[in-house]
Length: 579
Image (cartoon, rainbow, N blue to C red; front, side, top):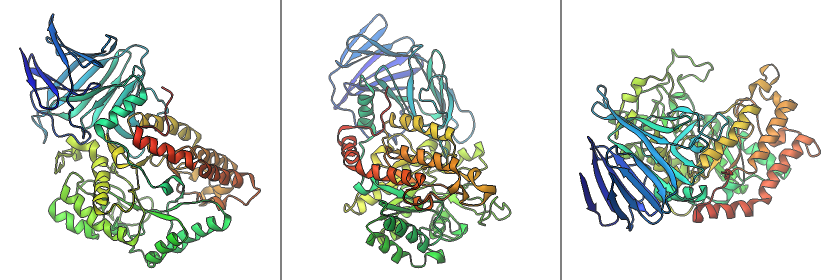
C-alpha cells in the first residue's frame, strides 16, 4: 500500500513494506533522507538542516516507486524495501542490500533494536571516511571496525565514494562498519529505526559541501591560531612556561601560543578544577598577563572529568550528573604505574545534560575571565579505563550511555563553543580536542590524533588518518609533532636525553615539516622535550631545520588564512585527499 504526504517544506513519502515502513524525504535536490521502521527516529545530534522545498516527480510502476528531483533519482522496491540511487540521467550510484532489525530483549535498551543496513558496492569502488583511523590505509574496503570513541581513533559514521556520493549514518550508538568484496554495511547497537542521509555531489568537494549543509558550516578561527604553538607534557610552573616563551623571543623564533597541560590545578583529587591551585602557579594571573605582553596567547588544558575535591564534582555528583566508570587518572597519587589502592574517584560528567553543560561553563568562566585565549579539551571521548560492556548501560540525560555513546565528544565541545559564543562575540572561539563526531566541524574545533607513538610507522599513519577525517567534512586536523610517547629514544630512560639522539632528531624534523602544512602547527609530547631551543644553536643542522619549518609556516600564513576563509565560506578543505 502506498501513501502520499506533502509537507510544507519538502516532499515526503512513506511506503509500507511488509512489517516495516520506508520513508523518503528530500532535504534538497541532491540530499535525501531514508528511514526504515515503524518508530520515529530519535532527535539527531548531528543534523541541523531542515528540509527545503524541493520539486520531486513521483512515478510508480512494476512494483517500484521512483522519486526524481532533477539531480537525484531514488527508486524504492515496493516488495523488499531496497532503495537504489541514480543520477537524474540514469547512472547507477549505489543500491542497498539487505537490512534488519533485531529486537534487544534485555538491558536498559530492551525494546529497541540492533539496526543494520547493507549497501552493494562495485568491486573496484573505494569508499573513504569514518574519521581518524590508525591503520595507515585511506580506503575502507575490506575493513571490519567496531566504532566506539577512543584515544587515538575518532569515529564519524560518514563515508563517501569515488562515484561522487556520500552517506551519513545517523546513529550515535556503537556501530560496526563492515566492508567486503560485495559492499559495506552499518550495524548500530541501539536504534528505533534505520536512519541515514544520501548526498550526491559528483565529486568529493561537493559531497563535503553537502555534509556541511546538513551538519553545519565551519567558523573562522583567529589568525594567531594558525601560527606556531609550543606545548609539552607539562610545564610544571609559571616560571618554566614563561622561560620557554622568553627563549623563543630571544632567539627570534616566531611563536603565537604557549600551551599549558594538566596539573596546574594540583593533585589528582583536584583533577580538572579549572583553577590554578598548584602552588607553582600561584602567580597565574601575572603569567597570563606576561604571555599577552609578549604578544603571545595561552591555551590551557581542560577535561571532561572531575576529581572528588573539585567544586564541579561536589555540585554535579548529588544531582546525578557524573558517569561512575573508571577514567584517567585512575590513581589519586601522581606515581606511575598508578596505585590502585588509592583510587582517584575521578568521573566524567554527563554532557547530554544541559544543566551539566551549564555548570561546566560556569566554572570555566573563572579561566575565561583571567584571559585564557583557547581551550584544550582533552579526553573528550572520554577516557574509559577498565572497560566493561555494562558501563554502557549507565543512564544519561538522553538515555543509556550505549544509545548515545559516540556523540559524547560533540556534546562536550559544542557545549563550550555555544556558551562562549553566547557569553561574548569579542573574540573567536579556539578549541583543540581529542575526539569528534558528525557535525563537530561547526564548532571549528581542531582535532588531534591522540597520544600516538613517536615512530616512523606512526608518523606515516597520520597522513591517511587526517585525509580520511577531512573527507567526513571536518577540515581541522593536527597531530602531536614528533609523536607523543618518545621514551625509547632516551639514553637508558634519562628524561630528555633524546634531544641529542640523531634518530629522534630526524623523526622530529620530518614531523615538524609535515606540521607546516597542517591546519594547526603544534609541537607536543612526553618524555622528550620539544622546545626548539634545546636542539642546538644557529648553524646546527637540526636546529636550523626546525627553525626553518616554523619560519616557512609564517611565510605561508597569507595563503593559510585565505584557505581558512575558503573553508568557512565555500566549504573548502585544508588537506584534500586526491580522490
